[in-house]
Image (cartoon, rainbow, N blue to C red; front, side, top):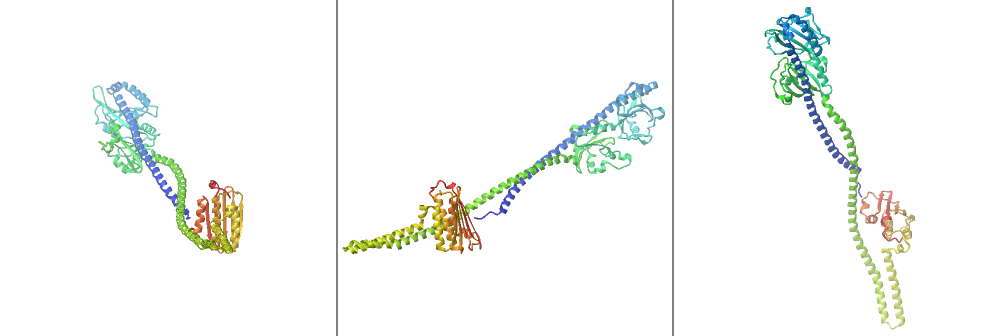
Length: 588
């Protein structure tokens, strides 16, 4: 029987493992990309949610400042003061001190006359508000916010750019980001008498923005209308245009800035960052409603006034990768475990496929042997019939004819002596006939097998074989289990007979070894010669005798093994189970 090479089993394993692993990989990749897509959408939603939250904080803060400014501009004490009642000046200043202390967000509360001179100022003083002495009041005529305030109508508010507070032409240290809210003030007669200014500490607002973003994946950035940093995670980048360095968003992310400065709101990707942005105005005129943020990407900003602020939420590449990377860290162990399981299952499948192919090849080989055996058996049967017919015709036919003639002739004789001679010859011929019949029967089936059993038959045959062929036989017969089914005994005898016949014809050996052991579970046969042997298994599959031995063994559910190597002799090993043949008659 041909064997399936180990490489075929490995190739079968590779096919199953590769196909299954490919499918598993596609599933894991699909899961990963689905998670990545979901995380991308979640990051987009988080950016929009955070920008809405941050813009609400900014708008609420600015709205409070505008309300405070308009409230203070309509105070009765202020009306009295600017109408010429200077006695209420100290009371008004005291009210500003209390107001600054309670609010805690105004660095300065100032009254300017129409010439830009400070006539009253209260400094917050880091939480200890105080009234600035008259000799320390300053002239603000040249400041841009005063010049712009001159264009306001009653009830209107001017909001300056966000910058750092300057005292006596020097940037105040530590840095103090402020934004100035101005509105004109009028006396009781409706005449403009000056301006009320609130210096809003926008740094407090920045702190609230940073705190609101602390538990999110993104960071908050505030830009002025020119793309310069007012607030960012890296504080060294803020206020670059005032502090003498050129750090700015419009230079660091120039491609993103090209879109942001032309639009009121939107969301974009740039250099791995996801920027969600919204343009705000401290005057209360927000260009884009929060509810329409998602639809504002294609809207061109209606104005690009220098006082507008741009609020951004920056989701860094690390933040964007965090969700997919976490999913990947969970999927990789699952994938590796699944691949290991697939490898084990593929091994089982490959092994099962290997055995199935082996069984199929065994069946195919058995069918091929059966066809050869059937063909040769037919020839052998015909030859046996011709031989028996020849024996019957040549030997038995002549004897029967001689007996017939002697009896007929004796019936025609009247001489008693002649009749006796003829009858004696007929009796002798009859004895010879019986002897020939007995010899023919012995060739077909040895009677000693029925009379004395398998062990005695084998001993008798081995002795006869050794005497006939002059080949020395070393035998070892061990019959511990005496009851052997008849069919098993007959086939074992025929296998021994065929194995020794082959040794005598082909082995050119001087000795053979025959071992037969009958145990409780099986009968085991071992025949080995020390002759020339043969090369390859082809001879084993083509010889009628070997095919016959194999078929006899397999018909009894046994195992047959024939091995031969050139110069090393030939070995026949047979194992026939007794349990599987217990239903057969057991007479041996």
